Amino acid sequence: MGRSANSAFKLPEGVSYVRGDFGQADLIRELLDRNEEVIHLAYATVPNTSFDNPLSDLLQNLPPAVQLFTELAERGGKLLLVSSGGTVYGEAMQIPICERHSTRPISPYGVTKLTLENYAHLYSATHGLKYVCVRPANAYGIGQRPYAGQGFVSTAIASSLRGQKIRIFGQQGTIRDYIYVSDLASGIVSALEHGRISETYNLGSGLGRSNLDVVQAMAPLMQDIGYKVEVEHLPERVFDVRVNVLDSRKLFEHSGWKPHVDFMEGLVRTRDWLGNLND
Image (cartoon, rainbow, N blue to C red; front, side):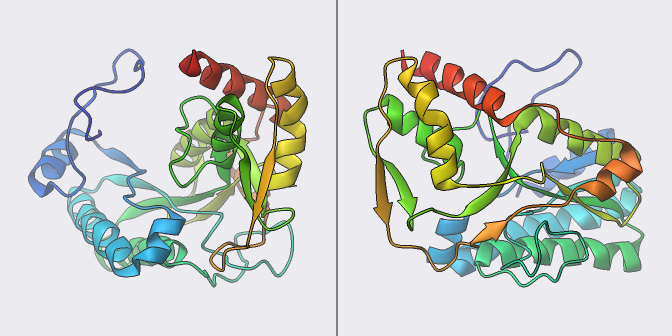
């Protein structure tokens, strides 16, 4: 489901694309009447826009999600809620972060994501909603649009392709756990199929890289195709968690899932995809 007239990517056989908005209650009811499982990926904002307008972040994302929980609970369906592993925990007390870590987000984005988790738990306890929650690390890879307010890898590569400096907030930037999109997708499916009801699972690589580490890793890959990598350092942002690396052993123990795409291989795939778009 999406707002565009057609899907941006070729869909697998047997998958149908529906044009619509998450806030269209009648359309959501119609779809729920025909489907028993829902993967909730819809979100209207990103961390920096949520910081600029916290009320808009809340109003755009919370009401339609709670309506979905209500309708799905009434039908006895199953929900896979995709939350945020990068923002709900806040500043880490230990690395890597396990699911039992305290949740003290420092951005409106993280607060709303955590609120969605709490509403899912509420509807589980009071309305019998069957849900599983995943907290993914920073996804990257083919299909990720640059300059969207999220997605450092795609934006960094696209900046190099355009001859622009790569913006890093601080000297090293934030440290993040990067997971390739196909590993993220397989992790979501594993949680849906094998995750335990009302449980929360981290979904990441367990390896942390700063923004500067990412730039240094991609530099020779860009040089191989004739592009330079230059960096512009900007002041740190108050809503950026400094370090976020996830412990995903719980999902492995419950489902057998683990990531397969090496970070450098993922960078090459992303570079080549964005390079083709740039031609």
